[in-house]
Structure formats: structure tokens, C-alpha cells
Image (cartoon, rainbow, N blue to C red; front, side, top):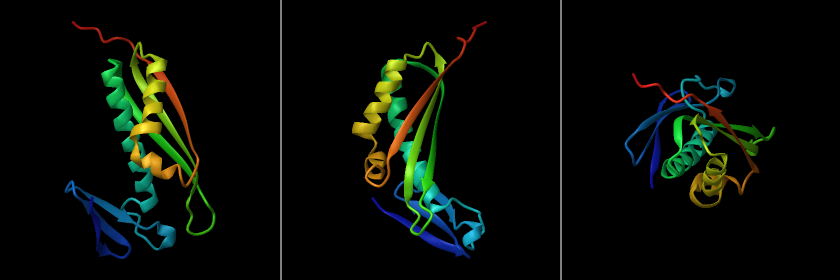
Length: 144
């Protein structure tokens, strides 16, 4: 696996990786950045959210859950002093759908946490990771 960043201007870079996609990165304006891209630590959290979201959704689909929408939100606290590492991370899963089984959601999250999500496996060595979930019941769509 490879990744690279190319300098654009000031403290703004374009990141690329093996998938061929591009992402804008920028330092926080308080640190002299333009604010026209992700901060690197934000990308770490996006990576965590994406990794666990893919795991959980895949498992819920295999468990034939009627998921209409799914969001993963990650909130993190950082140390006050440099290098300002994460000190606490909370992952919140929001599952919307019809007749969602809470046990299926809990098991999917557990499997992501303990077996599948490589990003979470790395980050938990640096900071505690807590989790929460919410199931929002939605009406079955009416077909006309």
C-alpha cells in the first residue's frame, strides 16, 4: 500500500493513494493553513469511520436487516500539547430502517471492533475507543 502528497501552495497538499483518488489536505488556519482541505487528523477519523462502516453494513446486509440509511459519526478528543494525539474516541452508529434487530447491530459492531476493522485495531493502541449506537425505526415504504 502506498500513499503520497503533493504540495499545491502554502500548507495545502493533494493526497493520492493506490486507488487513484485525490483528497485535499490543509493545515488548520490557526496553524497557517488556508482551510481548503482535510486536516490530517480528520482524515484519520474519516478512515476509522469508513473502515467500521463498511464492516458493519456488510454484516447487516448478510444478516438481511432492512437498513434504509446508515451513518457512522466519530468524535475525538486530542491532547492539549504537541503532538496532540487522540486521547479519547467515540464512534456512534446510526441505523435507520424497518424491524432492525438490536442484537444484529451489536454483533456487527462487535465483529468490526474485534476482528475486521484494521484502522480501529491500530488506533485502540493509542487511545480508548468507545462506541454507541442508535436504531431509528422507519415505516415500511408503501408501494403503489
